[in-house]
Image (cartoon, rainbow, N blue to C red; front, side):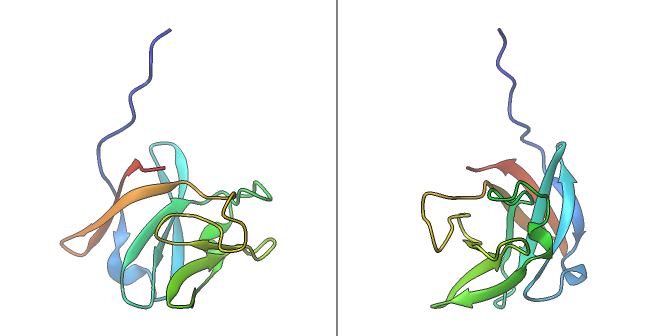
Length: 116
């Protein structure tokens, strides 16, 4: 059996200006549904778009906010809040959303390999 290598290339998703503060967009990156968010400080984060509780691909449509200064997205399905920095659920640390490397190059948001 051969191991499949993780993609290491970066995929351009959109212009940073196309993502309003405290909102998200969905993108297909290396065949995976990814949600890209811009928080209130203009930092960009990338998580799986799949809600781990409902298994629906909806997180990009969630409500972005802060709790105790920590940026999060609340799932539109059952409202679980996931920390944008590492995908951990603020209400149940045993639940998490996979995260992806993300960067902004010349005003374009790029998503790279899965981190967790």
